[in-house]
Image (tube, rainbow, N blue to C red; front, side, top):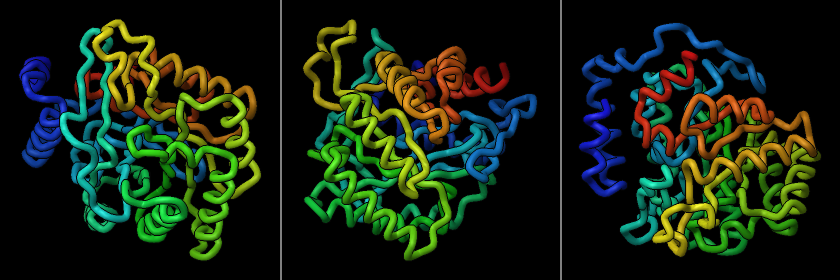
Length: 328
């Protein structure tokens, strides 16, 4: 496996990502993914009325369009989150837009919600054979503005809620201009009202999470926590990528635009998880950001996350990391 990972690093990061998933899908169709499957049953948990095979899942971005649900599910994840998906298909930002940070074990991306659109994803959700929990991460189109952005979220919810086990509302990506403004108190109020209208109209009983940025001020986070606790929104996912590059060892990337993930994100993610738990012991919380080892995974659980997600660590270390985390 390490040989394959080393070969893939010859290619640009975005190309390597695509090749990896295609290769994984091919191996799955040959019935050979059992070499990565856990040798012992992981401990299932019940959370929010859903039965998770274990507490480790994929973060949004790994499989944006739900094209690889079955092969990723075969690796032993406790749940999958697909997306971020938008109402209309879009190409995302200009390339190059993904950068490996080898010295820092991190990635900078400025993808910009490149995806095939909500209808494509729904088709895949109707056809997959994976028997685990699937969450859908939804976003707004790049060319939507003002209230159109909120309408993008409600359109996605209407189309996907029947096929998703839970839904994540992504208002914290740094790669769609002004999207993070939705985390302000005025915009959060409008967004939550629109989401609750959808919940009531369509009698949606699925959990709905808000994914937050690690770069927001404490007052903003506290406001969001209070809104979640006093609304029909279920919980929080902490965190998205950070725009803060100050912790990087490689000075070359200090001024690169985009969101930073991987090892340099760990501390900021953990700090926010701790902050959320200081404010509320009960709010449902999924931790993500900087999980590069079993130690990192356990740390997020110890800080109070109910579930943990991984993306960059999986890309850097390969499928073997999932096996090591779950089986130890």
